[in-house]
Amino acid sequence: MSQPFEIDLHSEFLRADLFLAMGQPVEAARILEPVVEAEPANQAALEALARAYYGSAQLARAEGALARLVQLAPANGWARRALARTLERQSRHAEAVPHHRMADALGAQ
Image (cartoon, rainbow, N blue to C red; front, side):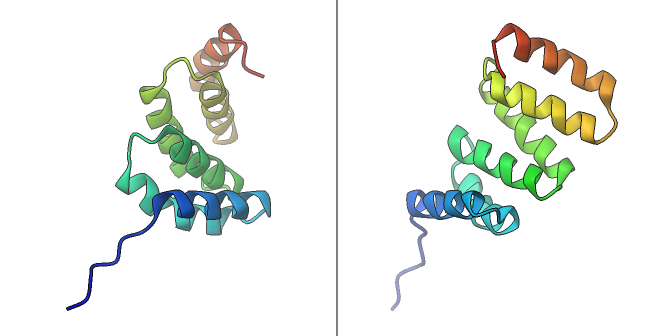
């Protein structure tokens, strides 16, 4: 009888990070989706997934990942700024304003 396949989440995260660094966000997202599914509160994986979605212009998915990240870590200035920029890329400027303000207050770049 074979053992069920279990992914090494840390190795997969590192592999996805490598794909992001190589400018291949679609592949990074494909790898990160099961990581985030297995650990939905893992902020590092969620941030990487949001970066991958944003980098591949999957803006609705990026917005969802960033909204979850902001919910988990409301004081994450990077997530606030990234969510604002994602909303702006979808021509939702008014919705982006409060996130920009919060990012400014948190000292995010």
